[in-house]
Amino acid sequence: MTSRTRENKKLSTARTLMRVYPFAKSARNRIILGGVSALLAGVVALAIPLVLQWIVDGPMRSGDVSRLWPAVLIVLALGVAEAVFIALRRLFVLTPSTHIEADMRNAFYRKLQDLPVAFHDRWQSGQLLSRVISDLSLIRRYIAFGIVLLVVNIVTIVIGTAVLFYWHPLLGVVFLVSCIPVWIYGYVFEQRYSKVARLSQDQQGDLATAVEESVHGIRVLKAFGRGKFSLQKFAKQAETLRGTEIEKAKAIAGIWLWLLLVPDIAFALCLLGGVWLAAADQLTVGQLFAFFATAAILRWPIESIGFLLSMTFLTRTAIDRFFEVMDTENTVTDPENPVSLGTREGRLVFEDVHFRYQDSPAQFPDLLDGIRLEIEPGETMALVGLTGSGKSTLTALTTRLYDVTGGRITLDGVDIRDMTREELRTHIAMAFEDATLFSASVRDNVLLGRPGLEGEEAQRVLDEALDIAQAGFARELPDGLDTLIGEEGLSLSGGQRQRLALARAVAANPAVLVLDDPLSALDVDTEALVEAALRRVLTTTTALIVAHRPSTVTLADRVALLENGRITAVGRHSELLATNEHYRYVLSSLEDEEARERRESEREERQLSRDAERTVGR
Image (tube, rainbow, N blue to C red; front, side, top):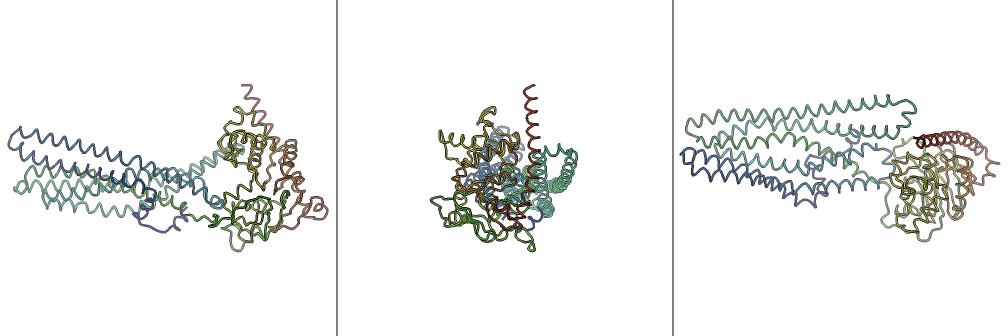
Protein backbone atom coordinates (compact mmCIF):
# COMPACT_ATOMS: atom_id res chain seq x y z
CA MET A 1 0.00 0.00 0.00
CA THR A 2 2.83 2.40 0.74
CA SER A 3 4.12 2.15 -2.82
CA ARG A 4 0.73 3.17 -4.20
CA THR A 5 0.67 6.04 -1.72
CA ARG A 6 4.02 7.33 -2.91
CA GLU A 7 2.87 7.17 -6.51
CA ASN A 8 -0.13 9.43 -5.83
CA LYS A 9 0.31 13.09 -6.63
CA LYS A 10 0.64 15.14 -3.46
CA LEU A 11 -2.35 17.43 -3.05
CA SER A 12 -3.14 19.92 -0.34
CA THR A 13 -5.83 18.95 2.14
CA ALA A 14 -8.24 21.54 0.67
CA ARG A 15 -7.71 20.32 -2.91
CA THR A 16 -8.13 16.71 -1.82
CA LEU A 17 -11.42 17.48 -0.07
CA MET A 18 -12.65 19.34 -3.17
CA ARG A 19 -12.37 16.14 -5.20
CA VAL A 20 -15.64 15.04 -3.62
CA TYR A 21 -17.43 18.10 -5.04
CA PRO A 22 -18.72 16.39 -8.24
CA PHE A 23 -20.57 13.90 -6.03
CA ALA A 24 -21.73 16.59 -3.57
CA LYS A 25 -22.75 19.13 -6.22
CA SER A 26 -26.43 18.14 -6.20
CA ALA A 27 -26.55 18.60 -2.41
CA ARG A 28 -24.58 21.86 -2.43
CA ASN A 29 -27.53 24.15 -1.66
CA ARG A 30 -28.73 22.10 1.29
CA ILE A 31 -25.22 21.85 2.71
CA ILE A 32 -24.86 25.63 2.40
CA LEU A 33 -28.21 26.10 4.13
CA GLY A 34 -27.00 23.77 6.88
CA GLY A 35 -23.85 25.85 7.27
CA VAL A 36 -25.87 29.08 7.37
CA SER A 37 -28.15 27.59 10.02
CA ALA A 38 -25.16 26.55 12.12
CA LEU A 39 -23.61 30.00 11.70
CA LEU A 40 -26.84 31.71 12.76
CA ALA A 41 -26.93 29.45 15.82
CA GLY A 42 -23.43 30.64 16.69
CA VAL A 43 -24.30 34.31 16.13
CA VAL A 44 -27.42 33.98 18.28
CA ALA A 45 -25.31 32.41 21.03
CA LEU A 46 -22.85 35.31 20.82
CA ALA A 47 -25.75 37.77 21.16
CA ILE A 48 -26.71 36.40 24.57
CA PRO A 49 -23.72 38.03 26.36
CA LEU A 50 -24.87 41.43 25.03
CA VAL A 51 -28.18 40.98 26.84
CA LEU A 52 -26.40 39.71 29.95
CA GLN A 53 -24.20 42.80 30.00
CA TRP A 54 -27.27 45.02 29.85
CA ILE A 55 -28.90 43.01 32.68
CA VAL A 56 -25.84 43.31 34.96
CA ASP A 57 -25.20 46.99 34.28
CA GLY A 58 -28.91 47.87 34.15
CA PRO A 59 -31.67 46.18 36.21
CA MET A 60 -29.32 44.31 38.58
CA ARG A 61 -27.23 47.40 39.31
CA SER A 62 -30.23 49.70 39.73
CA GLY A 63 -32.37 47.13 41.53
CA ASP A 64 -35.29 47.71 39.13
CA VAL A 65 -36.73 44.17 38.92
CA SER A 66 -39.48 45.23 36.51
CA ARG A 67 -36.86 45.76 33.80
CA LEU A 68 -35.37 42.30 34.41
CA TRP A 69 -38.22 40.15 33.00
CA PRO A 70 -38.08 41.46 29.38
CA ALA A 71 -34.35 40.75 29.31
CA VAL A 72 -34.93 37.22 30.65
CA LEU A 73 -37.52 36.59 27.93
CA ILE A 74 -35.06 37.85 25.31
CA VAL A 75 -32.40 35.39 26.58
CA LEU A 76 -35.01 32.59 26.46
CA ALA A 77 -36.00 33.54 22.93
CA LEU A 78 -32.35 33.58 21.84
CA GLY A 79 -31.82 30.13 23.40
CA VAL A 80 -34.87 28.73 21.59
CA ALA A 81 -33.69 30.30 18.31
CA GLU A 82 -30.25 28.72 18.74
CA ALA A 83 -31.86 25.29 19.26
CA VAL A 84 -34.07 25.75 16.18
CA PHE A 85 -31.09 26.70 14.01
CA ILE A 86 -29.14 23.65 15.26
CA ALA A 87 -32.12 21.42 14.40
CA LEU A 88 -32.33 23.01 10.95
CA ARG A 89 -28.63 22.37 10.41
CA ARG A 90 -29.15 18.66 11.05
CA LEU A 91 -32.30 18.59 8.91
CA PHE A 92 -30.55 20.21 5.95
CA VAL A 93 -27.36 18.11 5.85
CA LEU A 94 -28.12 14.60 7.15
CA THR A 95 -30.22 13.27 4.25
CA PRO A 96 -28.08 14.75 1.42
CA SER A 97 -24.93 13.26 2.96
CA THR A 98 -26.43 9.76 2.76
CA HIS A 99 -27.24 10.33 -0.93
CA ILE A 100 -23.66 11.44 -1.55
CA GLU A 101 -22.35 8.32 0.17
CA ALA A 102 -24.68 6.13 -1.89
CA ASP A 103 -23.62 7.82 -5.15
CA MET A 104 -19.94 7.40 -4.31
CA ARG A 105 -20.44 3.76 -3.33
CA ASN A 106 -22.32 3.05 -6.56
CA ALA A 107 -19.61 4.79 -8.59
CA PHE A 108 -16.94 2.78 -6.79
CA TYR A 109 -18.71 -0.52 -7.44
CA ARG A 110 -19.33 0.46 -11.06
CA LYS A 111 -15.61 1.20 -11.42
CA LEU A 112 -14.69 -2.17 -9.90
CA GLN A 113 -16.96 -3.92 -12.37
CA ASP A 114 -15.43 -2.00 -15.27
CA LEU A 115 -11.77 -2.48 -14.34
CA PRO A 116 -10.00 -5.45 -15.94
CA VAL A 117 -9.12 -8.67 -14.18
CA ALA A 118 -5.48 -7.54 -14.03
CA PHE A 119 -6.50 -4.86 -11.51
CA HIS A 120 -8.20 -7.40 -9.25
CA ASP A 121 -5.15 -9.66 -9.50
CA ARG A 122 -3.07 -6.90 -7.88
CA TRP A 123 -5.49 -5.56 -5.25
CA GLN A 124 -6.50 -7.33 -2.07
CA SER A 125 -10.26 -7.65 -1.66
CA GLY A 126 -10.05 -6.45 1.95
CA GLN A 127 -8.46 -3.18 0.82
CA LEU A 128 -11.32 -2.60 -1.60
CA LEU A 129 -13.89 -3.56 1.03
CA SER A 130 -12.47 -1.12 3.59
CA ARG A 131 -12.65 1.68 1.02
CA VAL A 132 -16.25 1.05 0.00
CA ILE A 133 -17.47 0.68 3.59
CA SER A 134 -15.28 2.39 6.20
CA ASP A 135 -13.81 5.18 4.09
CA LEU A 136 -17.09 6.20 2.48
CA SER A 137 -18.84 6.15 5.85
CA LEU A 138 -16.17 8.52 7.19
CA ILE A 139 -16.61 10.82 4.18
CA ARG A 140 -20.38 10.89 4.76
CA ARG A 141 -19.96 11.85 8.41
CA TYR A 142 -17.52 14.57 7.49
CA ILE A 143 -19.86 16.07 4.89
CA ALA A 144 -22.83 15.93 7.28
CA PHE A 145 -21.02 17.06 10.37
CA GLY A 146 -17.30 17.76 10.12
CA ILE A 147 -16.91 20.29 7.32
CA VAL A 148 -19.98 22.30 8.35
CA LEU A 149 -18.88 22.60 11.96
CA LEU A 150 -15.24 23.21 11.05
CA VAL A 151 -16.10 26.18 8.82
CA VAL A 152 -18.80 27.51 11.14
CA ASN A 153 -16.69 27.16 14.29
CA ILE A 154 -13.76 28.96 12.67
CA VAL A 155 -16.09 31.79 11.60
CA THR A 156 -17.63 31.82 15.09
CA ILE A 157 -14.15 32.11 16.64
CA VAL A 158 -13.35 35.05 14.34
CA ILE A 159 -16.64 36.82 15.14
CA GLY A 160 -16.31 36.01 18.84
CA THR A 161 -12.77 37.37 18.93
CA ALA A 162 -14.03 40.60 17.35
CA VAL A 163 -16.69 40.78 20.09
CA LEU A 164 -13.97 40.35 22.71
CA PHE A 165 -12.10 43.29 21.19
CA TYR A 166 -15.36 45.22 21.38
CA TRP A 167 -15.57 44.67 25.14
CA HIS A 168 -11.95 45.73 25.58
CA PRO A 169 -9.04 45.71 23.06
CA LEU A 170 -6.41 44.76 25.64
CA LEU A 171 -8.32 41.67 26.79
CA GLY A 172 -8.94 40.74 23.16
CA VAL A 173 -5.21 40.92 22.40
CA VAL A 174 -4.38 38.78 25.45
CA PHE A 175 -6.92 36.16 24.38
CA LEU A 176 -5.73 36.18 20.75
CA VAL A 177 -2.01 35.97 21.53
CA SER A 178 -2.64 33.14 23.96
CA CYS A 179 -4.16 31.06 21.12
CA ILE A 180 -1.08 31.32 18.83
CA PRO A 181 0.51 28.08 20.25
CA VAL A 182 -2.64 26.21 19.22
CA TRP A 183 -2.22 27.28 15.60
CA ILE A 184 1.46 26.29 15.61
CA TYR A 185 0.74 22.88 17.07
CA GLY A 186 -2.13 22.46 14.62
CA TYR A 187 0.35 22.60 11.73
CA VAL A 188 2.63 20.04 13.43
CA PHE A 189 -0.41 17.88 14.14
CA GLU A 190 -1.38 17.80 10.47
CA GLN A 191 2.04 16.54 9.38
CA ARG A 192 2.10 13.81 12.01
CA TYR A 193 -1.52 12.73 11.98
CA SER A 194 -1.91 12.51 8.19
CA LYS A 195 0.82 9.87 7.93
CA VAL A 196 -0.35 7.73 10.84
CA ALA A 197 -4.01 8.01 9.78
CA ARG A 198 -3.19 6.73 6.28
CA LEU A 199 -1.12 3.89 7.72
CA SER A 200 -3.99 2.93 10.04
CA GLN A 201 -6.56 2.81 7.23
CA ASP A 202 -4.27 0.68 5.05
CA GLN A 203 -3.65 -1.71 7.93
CA GLN A 204 -7.39 -1.99 8.51
CA GLY A 205 -7.73 -3.04 4.87
CA ASP A 206 -5.00 -5.67 5.32
CA LEU A 207 -6.77 -6.97 8.42
CA ALA A 208 -10.06 -7.19 6.52
CA THR A 209 -8.28 -9.19 3.83
CA ALA A 210 -6.92 -11.59 6.44
CA VAL A 211 -10.41 -12.17 7.85
CA GLU A 212 -11.90 -12.74 4.41
CA GLU A 213 -9.16 -15.18 3.37
CA SER A 214 -9.45 -17.17 6.59
CA VAL A 215 -13.26 -17.40 6.28
CA HIS A 216 -13.12 -18.49 2.64
CA GLY A 217 -10.30 -20.91 3.38
CA ILE A 218 -11.71 -22.25 6.65
CA ARG A 219 -11.98 -25.78 5.25
CA VAL A 220 -8.30 -25.80 4.28
CA LEU A 221 -7.21 -24.36 7.63
CA LYS A 222 -9.21 -26.97 9.52
CA ALA A 223 -8.14 -29.82 7.26
CA PHE A 224 -4.45 -29.05 7.79
CA GLY A 225 -4.82 -28.07 11.45
CA ARG A 226 -3.49 -24.56 10.79
CA GLY A 227 -6.13 -22.63 12.69
CA LYS A 228 -3.67 -21.72 15.46
CA PHE A 229 -1.11 -20.51 12.91
CA SER A 230 -3.76 -18.39 11.19
CA LEU A 231 -4.78 -16.94 14.55
CA GLN A 232 -1.18 -16.05 15.41
CA LYS A 233 -0.74 -14.33 12.05
CA PHE A 234 -3.99 -12.42 12.51
CA ALA A 235 -3.06 -11.44 16.08
CA LYS A 236 0.27 -10.09 14.84
CA GLN A 237 -1.48 -7.92 12.23
CA ALA A 238 -4.05 -6.80 14.80
CA GLU A 239 -1.26 -5.90 17.23
CA THR A 240 0.45 -3.83 14.53
CA LEU A 241 -2.82 -2.01 13.89
CA ARG A 242 -3.25 -1.48 17.64
CA GLY A 243 0.17 0.16 17.79
CA THR A 244 -0.77 2.46 14.94
CA GLU A 245 -4.05 3.35 16.64
CA ILE A 246 -2.11 4.19 19.79
CA GLU A 247 0.06 6.54 17.74
CA LYS A 248 -3.13 8.17 16.46
CA ALA A 249 -4.44 8.47 20.01
CA LYS A 250 -1.17 10.06 21.16
CA ALA A 251 -1.34 12.60 18.34
CA ILE A 252 -4.95 13.47 19.20
CA ALA A 253 -4.11 13.62 22.91
CA GLY A 254 -1.32 16.06 22.13
CA ILE A 255 -3.55 18.54 20.35
CA TRP A 256 -6.26 18.12 22.98
CA LEU A 257 -3.68 19.10 25.62
CA TRP A 258 -3.04 22.37 23.84
CA LEU A 259 -6.72 22.98 23.08
CA LEU A 260 -7.68 22.56 26.74
CA LEU A 261 -4.64 24.15 28.34
CA VAL A 262 -4.34 27.27 26.19
CA PRO A 263 -7.96 28.49 26.69
CA ASP A 264 -7.58 28.00 30.44
CA ILE A 265 -4.38 30.06 30.45
CA ALA A 266 -6.09 32.67 28.30
CA PHE A 267 -9.04 32.75 30.71
CA ALA A 268 -6.73 33.19 33.70
CA LEU A 269 -4.79 36.02 32.07
CA CYS A 270 -8.00 37.73 30.89
CA LEU A 271 -9.52 37.38 34.37
CA LEU A 272 -6.45 38.95 35.96
CA GLY A 273 -6.46 41.77 33.44
CA GLY A 274 -10.24 42.20 33.60
CA VAL A 275 -10.30 42.55 37.39
CA TRP A 276 -7.49 45.12 37.19
CA LEU A 277 -9.36 47.08 34.47
CA ALA A 278 -12.62 46.95 36.42
CA ALA A 279 -10.85 48.20 39.54
CA ALA A 280 -9.45 51.07 37.49
CA ASP A 281 -12.98 51.87 36.20
CA GLN A 282 -11.90 51.15 32.61
CA LEU A 283 -14.38 48.26 32.38
CA THR A 284 -17.80 47.80 33.96
CA VAL A 285 -18.77 44.65 35.85
CA GLY A 286 -21.38 43.95 33.18
CA GLN A 287 -18.79 44.23 30.42
CA LEU A 288 -16.41 41.94 32.31
CA PHE A 289 -19.24 39.45 32.83
CA ALA A 290 -20.19 39.63 29.15
CA PHE A 291 -16.53 39.23 28.12
CA PHE A 292 -16.24 35.94 30.01
CA ALA A 293 -19.68 34.80 28.83
CA THR A 294 -18.47 35.34 25.26
CA ALA A 295 -15.18 33.57 25.97
CA ALA A 296 -17.13 30.66 27.48
CA ILE A 297 -19.22 30.42 24.32
CA LEU A 298 -15.99 30.37 22.27
CA ARG A 299 -14.55 27.55 24.38
CA TRP A 300 -16.54 24.83 22.58
CA PRO A 301 -15.62 26.01 19.05
CA ILE A 302 -11.96 26.24 20.10
CA GLU A 303 -11.96 22.80 21.74
CA SER A 304 -13.84 21.25 18.83
CA ILE A 305 -11.08 22.26 16.41
CA GLY A 306 -9.01 19.31 17.70
CA PHE A 307 -11.33 16.48 16.75
CA LEU A 308 -12.55 18.36 13.68
CA LEU A 309 -8.95 18.63 12.44
CA SER A 310 -8.34 14.93 13.12
CA MET A 311 -11.60 14.12 11.31
CA THR A 312 -10.51 16.35 8.41
CA PHE A 313 -7.20 14.55 7.99
CA LEU A 314 -8.85 11.14 8.32
CA THR A 315 -11.30 12.17 5.62
CA ARG A 316 -8.47 13.38 3.45
CA THR A 317 -6.79 9.96 3.57
CA ALA A 318 -10.17 8.30 2.98
CA ILE A 319 -10.66 10.43 -0.14
CA ASP A 320 -7.12 9.64 -1.29
CA ARG A 321 -7.82 5.92 -0.90
CA PHE A 322 -11.16 6.22 -2.69
CA PHE A 323 -9.64 7.99 -5.68
CA GLU A 324 -6.69 5.59 -5.87
CA VAL A 325 -9.21 3.15 -7.29
CA MET A 326 -11.33 5.69 -9.17
CA ASP A 327 -8.23 7.14 -10.88
CA THR A 328 -6.98 3.73 -12.00
CA GLU A 329 -6.70 3.65 -15.76
CA ASN A 330 -8.78 0.97 -17.41
CA THR A 331 -6.66 -0.73 -20.05
CA VAL A 332 -9.56 -2.83 -21.37
CA THR A 333 -12.07 -0.37 -22.77
CA ASP A 334 -14.78 -0.13 -25.41
CA PRO A 335 -13.88 1.47 -28.76
CA GLU A 336 -15.13 4.96 -29.60
CA ASN A 337 -16.90 3.64 -32.70
CA PRO A 338 -17.88 0.06 -31.89
CA VAL A 339 -18.70 -2.49 -34.57
CA SER A 340 -21.76 -4.69 -34.17
CA LEU A 341 -21.34 -8.29 -35.23
CA GLY A 342 -24.79 -8.72 -36.73
CA THR A 343 -25.35 -12.30 -37.91
CA ARG A 344 -23.39 -14.76 -35.77
CA GLU A 345 -21.52 -17.71 -37.23
CA GLY A 346 -18.98 -18.38 -34.49
CA ARG A 347 -15.67 -18.44 -36.39
CA LEU A 348 -12.95 -17.74 -33.82
CA VAL A 349 -9.41 -16.97 -35.05
CA PHE A 350 -6.20 -16.23 -33.13
CA GLU A 351 -3.83 -14.26 -35.37
CA ASP A 352 -0.25 -14.16 -34.07
CA VAL A 353 -1.47 -13.57 -30.52
CA HIS A 354 1.06 -12.51 -27.89
CA PHE A 355 0.43 -11.92 -24.23
CA ARG A 356 2.44 -10.99 -21.16
CA TYR A 357 1.22 -9.76 -17.79
CA GLN A 358 1.60 -6.05 -17.17
CA ASP A 359 4.03 -6.46 -14.26
CA SER A 360 6.18 -9.12 -15.89
CA PRO A 361 9.93 -8.26 -15.92
CA ALA A 362 11.20 -7.22 -19.33
CA GLN A 363 13.63 -10.15 -19.51
CA PHE A 364 10.82 -12.69 -19.16
CA PRO A 365 9.45 -14.17 -22.41
CA ASP A 366 5.83 -13.69 -23.45
CA LEU A 367 3.46 -16.16 -21.79
CA LEU A 368 1.75 -16.61 -25.18
CA ASP A 369 4.16 -16.22 -28.06
CA GLY A 370 2.58 -15.99 -31.50
CA ILE A 371 -0.56 -18.13 -31.17
CA ARG A 372 -2.12 -18.98 -34.53
CA LEU A 373 -5.34 -21.00 -34.39
CA GLU A 374 -8.58 -21.10 -36.39
CA ILE A 375 -11.79 -22.62 -35.06
CA GLU A 376 -14.52 -22.97 -37.67
CA PRO A 377 -18.23 -22.36 -36.95
CA GLY A 378 -19.74 -25.34 -35.14
CA GLU A 379 -16.33 -26.93 -34.57
CA THR A 380 -15.17 -28.13 -31.16
CA MET A 381 -11.47 -27.54 -30.48
CA ALA A 382 -9.75 -29.10 -27.47
CA LEU A 383 -6.75 -27.28 -26.05
CA VAL A 384 -4.23 -29.46 -24.24
CA GLY A 385 -0.86 -28.80 -22.66
CA LEU A 386 1.14 -29.24 -19.51
CA THR A 387 0.40 -27.19 -16.41
CA GLY A 388 1.59 -23.60 -16.88
CA SER A 389 1.62 -23.73 -20.68
CA GLY A 390 -0.94 -20.85 -20.88
CA LYS A 391 -4.21 -22.65 -21.61
CA SER A 392 -6.40 -20.73 -19.14
CA THR A 393 -4.78 -17.43 -20.13
CA LEU A 394 -5.56 -18.08 -23.78
CA THR A 395 -9.24 -18.72 -23.01
CA ALA A 396 -9.41 -15.56 -20.87
CA LEU A 397 -8.34 -13.49 -23.87
CA THR A 398 -11.45 -14.51 -25.82
CA THR A 399 -13.80 -12.41 -23.64
CA ARG A 400 -11.20 -9.68 -23.01
CA LEU A 401 -10.72 -10.50 -19.36
CA TYR A 402 -7.24 -9.55 -20.48
CA ASP A 403 -6.27 -7.86 -23.73
CA VAL A 404 -3.70 -9.30 -26.11
CA THR A 405 -0.36 -7.49 -26.07
CA GLY A 406 0.28 -8.42 -29.70
CA GLY A 407 -1.67 -9.74 -32.66
CA ARG A 408 -5.44 -9.98 -32.52
CA ILE A 409 -8.42 -12.27 -31.97
CA THR A 410 -11.32 -12.12 -34.40
CA LEU A 411 -14.89 -13.35 -34.17
CA ASP A 412 -16.49 -13.79 -37.58
CA GLY A 413 -13.78 -11.57 -39.04
CA VAL A 414 -14.24 -8.71 -36.53
CA ASP A 415 -11.47 -7.86 -34.07
CA ILE A 416 -13.01 -8.44 -30.65
CA ARG A 417 -11.49 -5.11 -29.51
CA ASP A 418 -13.70 -3.36 -32.07
CA MET A 419 -16.86 -4.56 -30.29
CA THR A 420 -18.21 -3.36 -26.97
CA ARG A 421 -17.36 -5.70 -24.15
CA GLU A 422 -21.07 -6.14 -23.42
CA GLU A 423 -21.83 -7.34 -26.95
CA LEU A 424 -18.73 -9.53 -27.10
CA ARG A 425 -19.76 -11.32 -23.92
CA THR A 426 -23.18 -12.09 -25.32
CA HIS A 427 -21.50 -13.92 -28.21
CA ILE A 428 -18.88 -15.79 -26.13
CA ALA A 429 -19.69 -17.51 -22.83
CA MET A 430 -17.24 -19.13 -20.41
CA ALA A 431 -17.35 -21.85 -17.78
CA PHE A 432 -14.36 -21.99 -15.47
CA GLU A 433 -12.78 -24.91 -13.65
CA ASP A 434 -13.09 -22.99 -10.38
CA ALA A 435 -16.87 -22.54 -10.53
CA THR A 436 -18.05 -19.40 -8.75
CA LEU A 437 -21.69 -19.09 -7.75
CA PHE A 438 -23.35 -16.07 -6.18
CA SER A 439 -25.51 -15.71 -3.08
CA ALA A 440 -28.73 -15.94 -5.07
CA SER A 441 -31.20 -18.59 -6.17
CA VAL A 442 -30.30 -21.45 -8.48
CA ARG A 443 -32.55 -19.85 -11.09
CA ASP A 444 -30.75 -16.50 -10.92
CA ASN A 445 -27.33 -18.13 -11.05
CA VAL A 446 -28.10 -20.21 -14.14
CA LEU A 447 -29.87 -17.39 -16.01
CA LEU A 448 -27.17 -14.85 -15.15
CA GLY A 449 -26.24 -14.46 -18.82
CA ARG A 450 -29.87 -14.10 -20.01
CA PRO A 451 -31.28 -11.25 -17.88
CA GLY A 452 -34.07 -10.40 -20.34
CA LEU A 453 -35.79 -13.78 -20.26
CA GLU A 454 -39.09 -14.11 -18.41
CA GLY A 455 -41.99 -16.51 -18.03
CA GLU A 456 -42.22 -19.74 -19.97
CA GLU A 457 -39.23 -18.97 -22.21
CA ALA A 458 -36.99 -18.47 -19.17
CA GLN A 459 -38.21 -21.72 -17.64
CA ARG A 460 -37.61 -23.61 -20.90
CA VAL A 461 -34.04 -22.31 -21.20
CA LEU A 462 -33.40 -23.05 -17.52
CA ASP A 463 -34.69 -26.62 -17.75
CA GLU A 464 -32.74 -27.30 -20.94
CA ALA A 465 -29.49 -25.96 -19.46
CA LEU A 466 -29.91 -27.97 -16.26
CA ASP A 467 -30.62 -31.15 -18.23
CA ILE A 468 -27.55 -30.69 -20.43
CA ALA A 469 -25.33 -30.08 -17.38
CA GLN A 470 -26.92 -33.02 -15.53
CA ALA A 471 -27.82 -30.58 -12.73
CA GLY A 472 -31.24 -32.02 -11.98
CA PHE A 473 -30.22 -32.25 -8.32
CA ALA A 474 -31.11 -28.55 -8.08
CA ARG A 475 -34.81 -29.42 -8.32
CA GLU A 476 -34.45 -31.61 -5.22
CA LEU A 477 -33.06 -28.79 -3.07
CA PRO A 478 -35.32 -27.54 -0.20
CA ASP A 479 -36.90 -24.74 -2.27
CA GLY A 480 -36.23 -26.25 -5.67
CA LEU A 481 -34.80 -23.86 -8.23
CA ASP A 482 -35.57 -20.94 -5.94
CA THR A 483 -33.23 -22.27 -3.24
CA LEU A 484 -30.73 -19.62 -2.19
CA ILE A 485 -27.16 -20.80 -2.67
CA GLY A 486 -24.77 -19.88 0.14
CA GLU A 487 -21.73 -17.68 -0.32
CA GLU A 488 -19.76 -18.83 -3.39
CA GLY A 489 -21.85 -22.00 -3.44
CA LEU A 490 -19.67 -23.64 -0.78
CA SER A 491 -22.70 -25.50 0.59
CA LEU A 492 -22.63 -27.58 -2.62
CA SER A 493 -20.04 -30.11 -3.68
CA GLY A 494 -17.41 -29.24 -6.27
CA GLY A 495 -19.19 -31.31 -8.89
CA GLN A 496 -22.54 -29.65 -8.19
CA ARG A 497 -20.99 -26.19 -8.49
CA GLN A 498 -19.35 -27.12 -11.78
CA ARG A 499 -22.59 -28.47 -13.22
CA LEU A 500 -24.47 -25.26 -12.33
CA ALA A 501 -21.65 -23.18 -13.82
CA LEU A 502 -21.79 -25.24 -17.00
CA ALA A 503 -25.57 -24.82 -17.11
CA ARG A 504 -25.06 -21.04 -16.79
CA ALA A 505 -22.72 -21.02 -19.80
CA VAL A 506 -25.09 -23.14 -21.89
CA ALA A 507 -28.12 -21.00 -20.95
CA ALA A 508 -26.34 -17.90 -22.28
CA ASN A 509 -26.87 -19.32 -25.80
CA PRO A 510 -23.51 -18.07 -27.11
CA ALA A 511 -22.06 -18.35 -30.58
CA VAL A 512 -18.81 -19.55 -28.99
CA LEU A 513 -18.63 -21.62 -25.82
CA VAL A 514 -15.29 -21.52 -23.94
CA LEU A 515 -14.93 -24.26 -21.32
CA ASP A 516 -11.90 -24.23 -19.00
CA ASP A 517 -11.99 -27.84 -17.81
CA PRO A 518 -15.56 -27.60 -16.49
CA LEU A 519 -15.88 -31.35 -15.73
CA SER A 520 -12.87 -31.93 -13.48
CA ALA A 521 -14.91 -32.44 -10.29
CA LEU A 522 -17.46 -34.87 -11.78
CA ASP A 523 -17.55 -38.58 -11.16
CA VAL A 524 -17.15 -40.98 -14.09
CA ASP A 525 -20.84 -41.70 -14.64
CA THR A 526 -21.97 -38.07 -14.39
CA GLU A 527 -19.15 -36.94 -16.67
CA ALA A 528 -20.25 -39.43 -19.32
CA LEU A 529 -23.84 -38.16 -19.16
CA VAL A 530 -22.70 -34.50 -19.38
CA GLU A 531 -20.43 -35.25 -22.34
CA ALA A 532 -23.25 -37.03 -24.16
CA ALA A 533 -25.55 -34.04 -23.62
CA LEU A 534 -22.82 -31.56 -24.59
CA ARG A 535 -22.31 -33.32 -27.91
CA ARG A 536 -25.85 -32.33 -28.88
CA VAL A 537 -25.19 -28.69 -27.98
CA LEU A 538 -21.78 -28.55 -29.63
CA THR A 539 -23.13 -29.65 -33.02
CA THR A 540 -24.37 -26.08 -33.55
CA THR A 541 -22.00 -24.14 -31.27
CA THR A 542 -18.32 -23.31 -31.73
CA ALA A 543 -16.40 -24.49 -28.68
CA LEU A 544 -12.91 -24.11 -27.27
CA ILE A 545 -12.39 -26.60 -24.45
CA VAL A 546 -9.38 -26.70 -22.16
CA ALA A 547 -8.85 -30.40 -21.52
CA HIS A 548 -7.26 -31.60 -18.30
CA ARG A 549 -8.65 -35.10 -18.83
CA PRO A 550 -8.21 -37.49 -21.75
CA SER A 551 -11.96 -38.13 -21.67
CA THR A 552 -12.64 -34.45 -22.41
CA VAL A 553 -10.53 -34.66 -25.57
CA THR A 554 -13.03 -37.09 -27.06
CA LEU A 555 -15.60 -34.27 -27.24
CA ALA A 556 -13.45 -32.39 -29.76
CA ASP A 557 -13.35 -32.47 -33.53
CA ARG A 558 -9.72 -31.35 -33.42
CA VAL A 559 -7.04 -30.88 -30.77
CA ALA A 560 -4.52 -28.03 -30.41
CA LEU A 561 -1.32 -28.76 -28.49
CA LEU A 562 0.02 -25.81 -26.51
CA GLU A 563 3.70 -25.99 -25.62
CA ASN A 564 5.74 -23.17 -24.04
CA GLY A 565 3.29 -20.51 -25.18
CA ARG A 566 3.03 -21.75 -28.77
CA ILE A 567 0.63 -24.00 -30.69
CA THR A 568 2.98 -26.74 -31.87
CA ALA A 569 0.44 -29.13 -33.39
CA VAL A 570 -3.21 -29.17 -34.49
CA GLY A 571 -5.11 -32.25 -35.65
CA ARG A 572 -7.44 -35.07 -34.75
CA HIS A 573 -6.81 -36.90 -31.51
CA SER A 574 -5.91 -40.16 -33.29
CA GLU A 575 -3.50 -38.37 -35.64
CA LEU A 576 -1.63 -36.56 -32.87
CA LEU A 577 -1.57 -39.68 -30.72
CA ALA A 578 0.14 -41.53 -33.55
CA THR A 579 2.58 -38.83 -34.67
CA ASN A 580 3.39 -36.48 -31.77
CA GLU A 581 5.55 -37.67 -28.87
CA HIS A 582 4.90 -34.59 -26.71
CA TYR A 583 1.16 -35.07 -27.17
CA ARG A 584 1.42 -38.64 -25.89
CA TYR A 585 3.44 -37.40 -22.90
CA VAL A 586 0.81 -34.75 -22.12
CA LEU A 587 -2.01 -37.32 -22.30
CA SER A 588 -0.20 -39.66 -19.92
CA SER A 589 0.20 -36.76 -17.49
CA LEU A 590 -3.49 -35.97 -17.82
CA GLU A 591 -4.40 -39.59 -17.08
CA ASP A 592 -2.44 -39.50 -13.82
CA GLU A 593 -4.07 -36.20 -12.86
CA GLU A 594 -7.52 -37.52 -13.80
CA ALA A 595 -7.12 -40.55 -11.54
CA ARG A 596 -6.12 -38.36 -8.61
CA GLU A 597 -9.04 -35.94 -9.21
CA ARG A 598 -11.51 -38.83 -9.39
CA ARG A 599 -10.34 -40.15 -6.04
CA GLU A 600 -10.71 -36.71 -4.45
CA SER A 601 -14.13 -36.18 -6.05
CA GLU A 602 -15.39 -39.56 -4.86
CA ARG A 603 -14.16 -38.85 -1.32
CA GLU A 604 -15.99 -35.50 -1.34
CA GLU A 605 -19.22 -37.07 -2.60
CA ARG A 606 -19.03 -39.80 0.07
CA GLN A 607 -18.48 -37.20 2.78
CA LEU A 608 -21.47 -35.18 1.58
CA SER A 609 -23.62 -38.34 1.60
CA ARG A 610 -22.56 -39.15 5.17
CA ASP A 611 -23.31 -35.56 6.27
CA ALA A 612 -26.76 -35.80 4.67
CA GLU A 613 -27.47 -39.11 6.40
CA ARG A 614 -26.49 -37.64 9.78
CA THR A 615 -28.77 -34.65 9.15
CA VAL A 616 -31.71 -36.94 8.32
CA GLY A 617 -30.97 -39.08 11.39
CA ARG A 618 -31.13 -36.07 13.68
